[in-house]
Image (cartoon, rainbow, N blue to C red; front, side, top):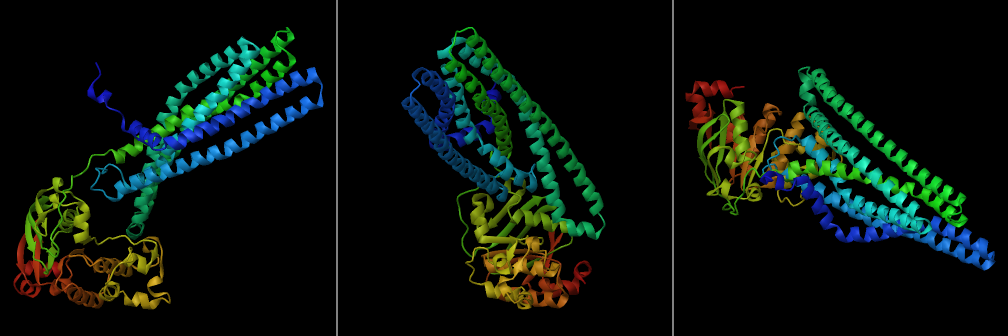
Length: 567
């Protein structure tokens, strides 16, 4: 008796079925056109045999003219059916690959929607590109498989009309070839899946290296990191060689078996013609079909390999698409302009953290341990979903567990200290959607005005990928400008000024307080300038709030606080 697990369909197979179902119309049209192409291709040697047979009997120019016209029709059919058939299939293939890329990317960009913690961003990138493309190839594989079968069947029927033994030889030979290759394709599928996993790990490793290149150079760890990448890449190379070896053995075996079948058909036809059992025209047809049939047989025999590759890629996509949700978001939306409340949160180093930021208040948190600040940011940014921690976070009076992720992020922006800078311009980095109404104020508040004035193009100055042509302070101010330009009801900033000088930091602190007046703002920082600009300061020590007052009062009466924030 089968268990529930064995009866449940595999996620990869479900993805392939979805791809086939969505493109059934294009596949039917492509199958008809490609079947017509293969039938016309098969008809060419048959027509040559008939021409030889009848022209030799009639010996008339009229018969020759009809024969030439028939060949012209066959050649035109071959050309047009191939052209339009492949156009239909490749359009469907490209469209389907795009759909899967977008779907995988959506899951990767919304980490709380799927539990993909086991996969790094580099691996998700590989799945969203190579695996999506290879999965969509199934749309072309099925019509080509069917059309190749049409060619083999037409050839077998034509040869059977000449002599039943020739037709049976083609059928038995084709079944034998496919049986051998089906066994070999299983090895290709498993080897390909392992190769894809190792290539994805290498991609993830190099992505990590690029992100951490500057810090690695700073403490001399770049050589060790490159050595680590070399080992991962070498594993991927070895597996790629193994896959190439298996593919080579598969292709060589297929070609050899196809050649043996073609030779067997030709020799058998020659023997039958020598014995007078078939005519010269039928011999020409048989030899022509024997040569022609190698191409559809080659295509037919390669299809199991591509099916296994598509299935291996679909299984990898299922790692992302079929992953269980981290949390099931609720349907509620927070009240506009509401407060932020953290009630008894336990996560990582946080030990029952509890505080409230009233609507319109500017509050700063001074963390004594950086890890606690990172854990708090993860909770507020919904990178750690409500089931991952104890306690409750309320936004506008609503628990985060009752809110959709989209509603949370529309209402509250959490800007991390290491926010990404994207290739484009200063303007597109600050205002990606192009709809900000506070862009000039954000640029001024973040003290990015000197960067804008420094370049002739102003806000349209080109920014390289990851802000490679900007200094650390410029990148940080650009990230801050983006956060301020979003103009959300609740803004959470994590160490927004660590890379700027003290004078600029002082100006930024005053500007933030001015620009965000009347809006809920929480800054997690040890910067004296930002702490002084806040309405009140909460001291976060050992995962709990241990003190609360203004910055100046804490400086006057708390020695530990002075040591923690003094610069």
